[in-house]
Length: 187
Image 1 (cartoon, rainbow, N blue to C red):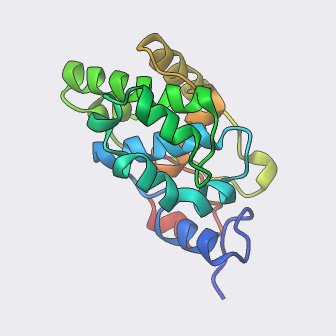
Image 2: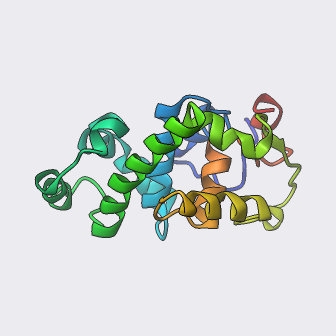
């Protein structure tokens, strides 16, 4: 039996997410945008809720195509508000549209969102060594800095806690517990 991080439940969806995605360094803009959207919608909810609705989000938001999302108008917004398969939070939906626009501005300024976001960790993951769940922070000085910079660039729903979860999910920080079988694999 494999030892996993404390937060993984017996849910097969959660196990697959932990074992195959969480903490794996992500450098492509499309996947980074998907994680950013999902993390912003997760704020205030459990991650399993988002995982269970992930395919619905993909369909509703055109496979997280930020170029299309940046062009969403009132009709698409209304369609999303009425979509019971996603989290129907008006402000988060509007935030996703404006975040797609800000995402593209960063691409113009830095060549890619990946170059921009990974510059905060010098292009390589920070490897933490947490043994207990109490040791894992909800946010850090670095996530405060990234959050502040993203907000300055026009992003919404990117508080420090959301950004730290994003950094964990995309492998910018390796927060697998040291006894988890994925700890060394994600380094």
